[in-house]
Image (cartoon, rainbow over all chains, first blue to last red; front, side, top):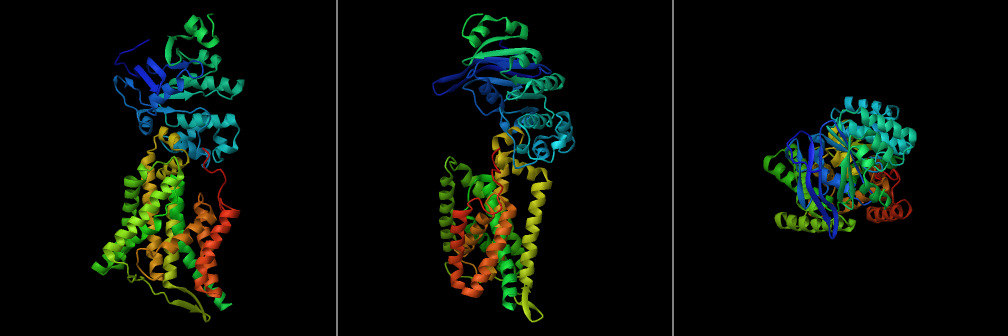
Length: 233
Length: 292
């Protein structure tokens, strides 16, 4: 599970995070090679979003380190985009006082071209001049995805992108994740989506990494079943 | 009727200054959720700098430009050195610090320049043109309209047509989301304060020649009028602040003209109370504008 390598991509080395007396992440290591889709799953409170927050620089670990392309990486939120990393948030964190196009332009590398390309890719270009708050929830989720894609990220971090979506929307999302050229880090509760798109999955339980492997390996892992179901499979 | 026409034009001219000052308050409110009660004192401070340069060089326009630049620097400095370190968990903290800044700035100005009124020259005649025997606007009024109009147009272009303006708006709506999109929220805040203070400085340079002149507290009453204008228009609404400024200017002009100048300050306060009680979000504010 632990990876100490200078290979291209993002790597987390022995990350530990405490919030007061709570051990949110306990010696977590993960390697995210370029072009892969890596899922992070676990029950509520497992530390998935905390791990994302460490990668984004919102949370500073008490110990451990990150590397990007083999070099030390000290993330700061406003510098992430410049390093080729973008993240969506749980729910829809949009600028409701701005139009859909303006929302996407904020994150776009090339203000107009990339914004329109991302809107078209996410099939919300016809709503470009409306405000996100006027759109149905599923469309707003697509706008959020478009905003992340407009930055043309190397690493795309998706935090529960399937939350609140119906089956058709989740199928569309799965196709998008499979088709993207970006490396994808996916935190998600929807197991069917995770199992269908991920190359590798890290399972956390109470902040501890309990399994890392392919979807098939994770499906047959007793510790994972116990963590999710409270009983050995 | 002649009087009404004159008071209307006079009110619009005065209202344009309130609009600019209210716009400065709205800029900071939208960026930082702080009502900058120090805006008036900051504007006076930069006006002192501007008029000092004008006196030393004999050039009003050089002093005018220096005052605006001083506003930019003072605004950026206040944000970087003071406001950035305020605990924003309670909105009251920023207000208290801003009020403290008022006392400090006015105290320092009193020590440096004294507490007597000093003349503030106007660059153009304030004698109104007469058309058909009716006094309308002075050249100075036209200058005020042009200056405030230019600021409104430039700010509108900045916020709607430029990447920087887009980032400033994004940072104001949802700072954490903006950071993830590569926006330097701190930098945008500094820029917002700088722009707001510069607009406040412009308003100060425009209004002081029409009042008693330079004095550390010279902008206090103007601040109350502009604050009323901002509340009237909605603290979240730049357009509302401009319309609010014009409305307050007109109201004050009519009240001063028909009821006497001594009634005007009370009328402003009465209007402020009425608006706060009946439409606390203002007449033009978009509801839920910052729910991202």
